[in-house]
Length: 216
Image (tube, rainbow, N blue to C red):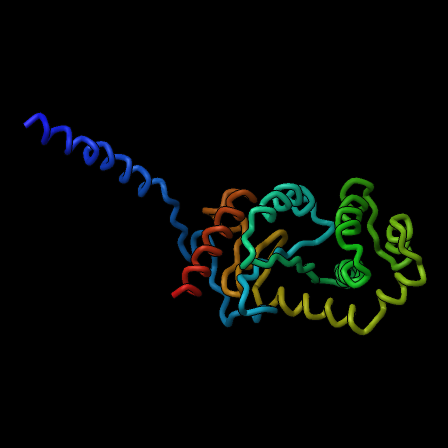
């Protein structure tokens, strides 16, 4: 009998642990923690799980989100690709979107993305003209001539238009918001999403959901 008790002891110990792990697994619900995007938004590479942040350089919430987002991006696996998509609702935001894509084309996005956030949120610059934005680029080693030429290029203008169309297709209503694989939109405007850290938790859950779907 004592032997049987010893053999059953591991099962008795494992039982509560298994229940605890199951109960602690977070479940996120459509309509409560995220919304479906219908029809889905096309992604650049169907072989990857695409995560996108919709932002505006003049948004203080986006500025405060950057450090947290930066740390989270470092945890993403090789099958996930992260992209930024500037929100465009007016002429001024269109100019800022073109500045973002100009930095990307010129290969200075890692430097200019935080510089543009700094200019608008810390230095309180409106960046309402091409010349004002050019000053930020020049201060970071880009010639004004190269900046102006790229800013007004067909490719950059097209990317800004695509960003505006993408935000409309995803029903983006504010910034920052996130989209996972063109199928799911995450926003702090949803009552169950209490803050930006919750957005990242939901995004992680949806990445796993998409990974499981691809595996099946």
